[in-house]
Amino acid sequence: MAKIIVMFGSNTEAEYTLEKAESKIGRSMDCDIVVDNLGVSRHHCSIVKDGDNWALVDGGSNNGTFINGQKISRHVLKTNDKIVLGKHSLIFDGAGFASTNGKGKKAGASMGGEMTMFVDQAALAKAMSGDGKRMVIALEQGGREVLAQLMREESTIGTSADIPAKGFLVKPIQAKILKTAAGHKIMAMGGWRAVRVNGDKVVRDRDLRAGDVIVIGSAKLTYKTA
Image 1 (cartoon, rainbow, N blue to C red):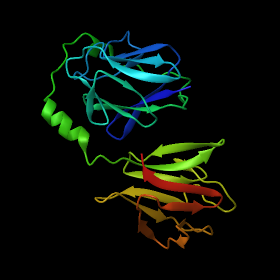
Image 2: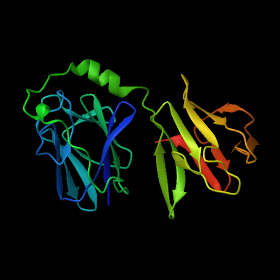
Image 3: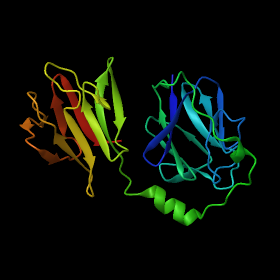
Image 4: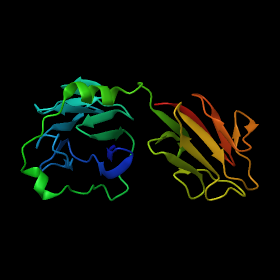
C-alpha cells in the first residue's frame, strides 16, 4: 500500500491511499486527488501502477509537474519524493496508509471550472529548489523504518506527540524539534526522562546535525536527510 500527503506550505490538507491502478490528480472535482489551486490544471497528472512501483505521469499540464525540483514527464516514485504542483506539494509514502479512511477532502467546486493560472516558471523553480535538503526523523515501527517529515516550525516527541517515543516516565511531550535558520534544534522539555543526542544529555537545547541519534526512553530516532 502507498499514500499521498497533500501539503500547502507546512500544513497537511489531505491524505489519499493509492488503491487504483491509476489515480488522477488535478483541480477538477472528478480527479481522485483534488488540488485546490488555480496554478494546477484541471487534469494535471496521474499516479499509475508500474510493476511493483508507482510512477508519476504529467498529463500535458500548463505549468508542468516537478519532482524534487526537477520538471518531469514520467518519474518512478520513491518514498519521500516531493511532487510540486503550483503552490501545493504532495509527499509520496511508498508504505503508507491514509489516516482518513483512505480518502482526502475534496476541493471547492468553484475551482474546477476556472481557467488555469499560468505560473512564472523561473520563480517557481527557484522556490522549489531550496538548498536541496529535506530533513526527517527516522524511527522503527513494526519492523520497518518510518520517516517523520519535519515540515512544521515545531514537531513534538513523546507518548502523545507528533513523533512517538515510548518508555517508563516519558512525558506526553518530552522534547521538541524546532526549525532554525541553519536547520533544526532539539529542546528537552524536562521531567525524569533524559533526552540524549549521541549519548550526551540535552540539558536545554542543542543544534542537530545529519546523522545525530536521539534516544528517549526506548525510542531511538535518527535525524537524517530524506
